[in-house]
Image 1 (spheres, rainbow, N blue to C red):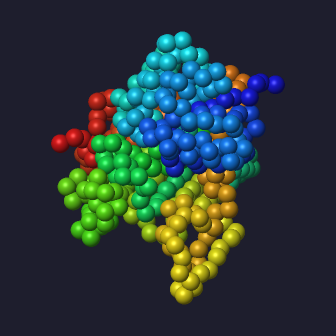
Image 2: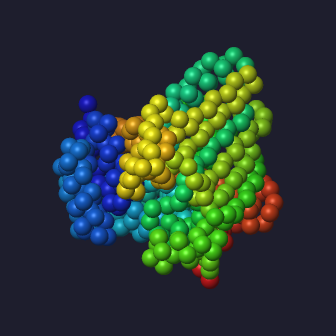
Image 3: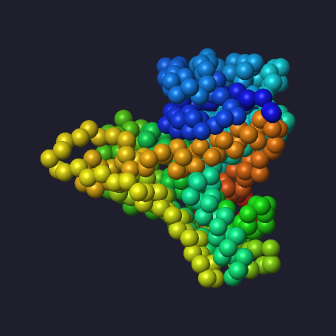
Amino acid sequence: MAPRLGVGFIGSGFITKFHIRAWEAVRDADVRGVWSPTRAHADEAAALARELRVGDARAFDSIEAMVAADDIDAIWICGPNFARVDNMSRIVSAIEGGATLRAVACEKPLGRNVAEARRMVELVEGAGLLHGYLENQLFQPGLERGKQIVWARAAAASGRPYLARAAEEHSGPHMPWFWQGDLQGGGVLNDMMCHSLEVGRHLLTAPGAPRHSIRPVSVSAQIASLKWSRPEYVQLLREMTGGQADYGARPAEDFARATVTYEDERGAPLVVEATTSWSFVGAGLRLTMELLGPEYSMSASSLEGGTKVFFSRRLREQAGEDLVEKQNAEQGLMPIVGNEAAEYGYENENRAFARWFADGVQPEVNFHAGLEVTELLMACYLSAEEGRVIDWKPAGLDTYVPPPARRS
């Protein structure tokens, strides 16, 4: 039996805490460290890990110190997009200075653009580390089971699926930097379509087949700022972000849609349709997926669980997100997501990566997968900017920066 893996987190915010809560379902690893630029935030996240009994976690004063710690075997990079390359560079510097480490896993996106994502691949492979790309939605229990059943029964009887749809929608990000194109890498397309495009590709790929078994052929996309560029919402966003995001002067898209055409092993066409939005107003975060084939279909929605509550207008409640992520209401009929860490795939994801790393196995969902997703995202931006279908693979992706991310 492989020894337990000791994991350290770079970052201490919303996504790190999601991972820590998911760790209650992980048997092969412990959370042992947290580093954040703000020490108090690192202390808070480490305390959460200890409270949940998922590891004797402590806050570290530097990334280098955490990498060098004897009980840290792997690092989960969960800090802001603009810090990705710096975080990875500091990990590599610690290793070059004599520290030992087994693996690194990185949250989406791998980089703000192709150049950054490619640099992440170079750094991790130059250091000889196992590496994983943390795409939680691939690990959603309902999605995993649905794909397994569809391919085993329906596709086996009538032919492979040919159309996948995926959407992620909510009312907007938590932190100010998400809204700033140069820091985040763009708008909602870069922030969330990384999920939807990869889910679509995953559903259309036969179980056990390699990622390259289906091949991109063309990309078409459109983006728009539908809500947050309206004058009243420009002002609201300034207030929400303490003046850090000004969509009157520098808007980023709050809506994006894309169509990616693939070919399967025999040259037959396959299609992924993806939609993402920061301008959706509903119960909260909504994830929807569909898979269609010759004689069958599959669908899933994160807001169609089995539990709902109703609060009348006379019941005054504080704003919060205790029912569902990005919750928009405290009155009326509202769905409850019982265990978000499980339903969104974080439990299965962390269990899988912890086991792969503990066993010394290189996951297929790795930094190369993250680079491929980034290339697709940049092709989507290029399509939207030029108003045309982009044949795969376009020249110049390594130097392309989306309009919302360009510094004036």
